[in-house]
Length: 277
Length: 155
Image (cartoon, rainbow over all chains, first blue to last red; front, side):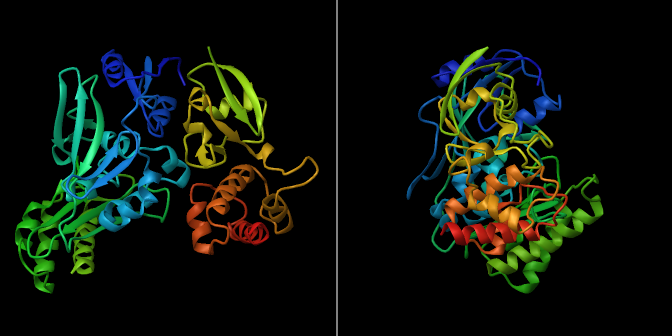
């Protein structure tokens, strides 16, 4: 790694001002940052480790507010939480698919989201669950839907100095069913070729979010419209799967061709809906 | 340079480190412990796995300065006594879990973390647990058997 200066701010305000400097990089889990610094995909003149800041760690749940995931909460903390498995099943499923146990002990959920990879596993379930981000920056604090956070591969609405301090995922209405299906070339240590998250609230709404088939995670809104308030019959599931295929905008890359990805969007959307009814 | 104070294999150490050095490089160079291996250096192969405060991590994906105040266990510290091997080390030798040996320190440290959480893991649980440790020699079968055998002994 190239030389950089290193800081461990004790407060969020201090972190925000350090991160406003050019080529300042935020360090929480570090599992993406260190790789990108070593491979010179990213430059750091200054690294700001936020792990000494109080109040941004851990998970908390409240029946009214839902699940709060702090900036320092690791993928492993989410993976082994019985509460997450019970109420946020698709998120729990997606986290088991992220890297290795070693990586998950360091990597943070918020880091996975901020890295804004189109194939990130945790993002489709969070969007399907209607999650929001709380952002602290030079201008104070703001809240934003995870769905509205991404601009393109690796790009978000964050400005220099901004720190995402927590993600809040609303509590699931009674009877809600959720699933995340990842499709890859092998079982572990893999980036998704296609990912599909579905949150189904029977009699009300079904949210379908596709990963790795567009520059940003994508809500299959036409498919959702077909299913709103309806029972998941074979015929409707088929129509929704076709609508999701039409909405996807995949590219061809080393992991799969665009044609194959589109095909898999249909297969996985159908499979997800069949498993939720 | 920053001075960090940490415990490595039960011994209190103070090391002067540059902030841009990985924990892996600090262990191998500053601390002189070369049992931990550098394979890919980007978190894919698991050869550099050590336990930090009991948790298995890729030491290549952590800065040395981040280990300040923590307790690090490497393969050199796993033996219960100078002339006795850990049951995992014995089982790897007895059952052919090591061939070229380069992945072995990381594999054994990951297995130690796995058995600490779950002393009698199924084959599937072992394979899920060591998914981040790559071995290009054994085909994994003998590694899985060695971990299972060590688990029985430790239980």
